[in-house]
Image (cartoon, rainbow, N blue to C red; front, side, top):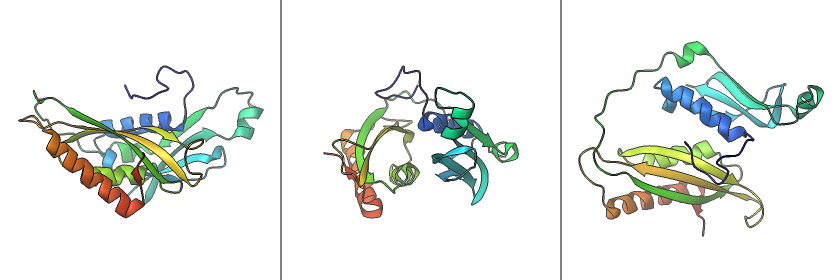
Length: 195
C-alpha cells in the first residue's frame, strides 16, 4: 500500500489513478516502456489530463472528468477515468523469476524541490537511471505546491527502496548512490533536496 500523509482518506486524486494505471502496466511487465505526458481531451479537466505513450505513440489517457461535465452530471466529487489500448498492454514481457532476498531492504525518502514545469515522471526517470541495479521500488508519494514553497517551484516526496539478493547493503553504498541521484537531478533538472 502506498504511503503518504493522506492514507485512509476517501477522496481519490489524479496521482492515485496514475498509480493504478502504473500497476496495470506493471502487471503487463512493461511499465518502463510507457511515459505519461500532459495531454488534452474534450471530456477531461484541462489541468489534470495525461497522455499515455509507448515509443512516442499514444496508447491511452487518464484524467479527471471536466468540471463542467461533472456539474452537468450532478457529481459532487471528482471522478477520474483512464483508457488503455489493450493490444499495447498485452504485449508486455513476462517478468523473470528472481529468488526472494533474505537480506533487509534499505529505504530512503527524499523531499525534492523542482521547477513547476518539470514533470514528476522526468524526476523519476533520472532517479531510476542513477539508482543502480538493486533498486526494487520507487514511489512518488506526495506533490505539494503552496505555502512555504517558492511560487515557481514544487515539492516532490519520493520513496526509494533497495535490496541486494545476496548480502546486506551498507550505508556507505546507499549514501553514495543517493548522492549520485541528487547530483544528477540538480545537473539535469535543477531539482534539489528540500531543506
